[in-house]
Image (tube, rainbow, N blue to C red; front, side):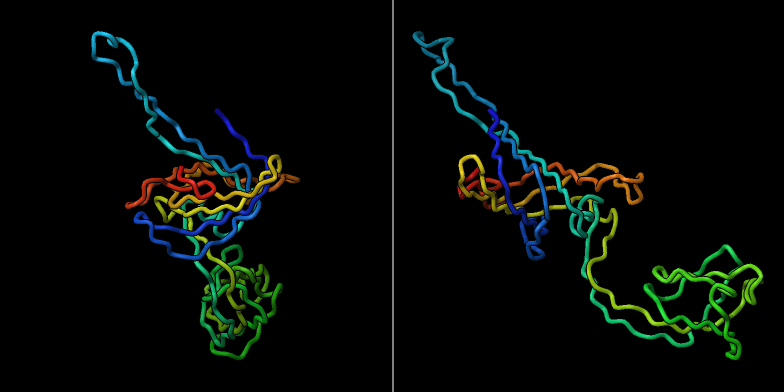
Length: 254
């Protein structure tokens, strides 16, 4: 039997360990649908063993053999992307500052070297020892976002292997850093506050521990005019030690 709740809802996730220990606060996952849970039952029949009931079923009971599910996320954020890439995410909170006389050796044109920071600005490149100031786009080029430098053909640094001093400002770090492929299993606790438009009732789903499975290609540079791609997950709910069920629907055990 299939039951579909056509409605809306807000879904929250937070990391959880294999022992059911929560390691962070809940975060909303954004627009997400469908969220599906399937409970597979095996019916165990008890045959009669008397003369009168031999060959007949005198009792039966259902045994839950598997609980699975799926979730499709329509919005990307650091948390969702990390889970899709079998990775982790961490907050970045660091102030910006200025760097004076960082020593590097700039390469020949076409090769790039990196400085110690990213998101740089107000760049000044001088000789080492100081005395000559070089000109951007004439003697050197830089990728400010990545903090990469190269020389320009025909410029004063074009011969490469030139020792230089670099001054620059770098921006504060905020938001999240996603690490790719450093987690074998991503476990999360999922809570959802939902509204069934057909019956006009509110209900909740709580899954104490869910292993997220994602095996899809994520295009960071897509075809022109391509829409934002979805993140699709398989859900495997687990029963935490000490519990009798992996979760609840409207407060009722699955």
